[in-house]
Image 1 (cartoon, one colour):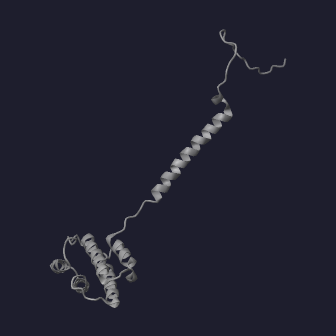
Image 2 (image 1 turned 120 degrees about the vertical axis):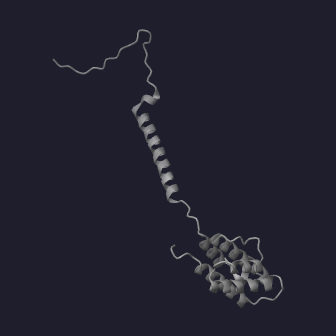
Image 3 (image 1 turned 90 degrees about the vertical axis):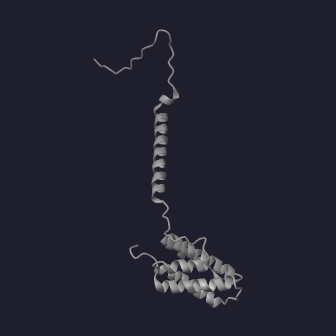
Length: 168
């Protein structure tokens, strides 16, 4: 006796034709599964990439050094615009680094204010020199020598570097 497996198809009394929907085909189900899996992998990859590419914020001294190194003396027609930018960078740095409110102060007010603080004396002398040169050039209409601008730019970079906290 040879028994073969036979599929038993039960017909409904009311309907004699059965319809198998297209999404019940195994190859369609595999394709849909692969698309969903690919979508999940893509979302996980994007989240991982976003997590790894988080922007690191610059510290106040990194930002100041970046701006000071970006200054090119050839870009300035006169010393007035150079010193406006230089003093602005220094004021914003000192305000961010030490919490001094310097943005609305004049150069002389900045010197007077910082003299009352515990700012290092050697750096204060350099800062006073820079702000004095800036004052004479910005408001006294003194002609500026490119050498003075270079020296003040180097002094500014030196001030920022010497005020970086040692534990960073």
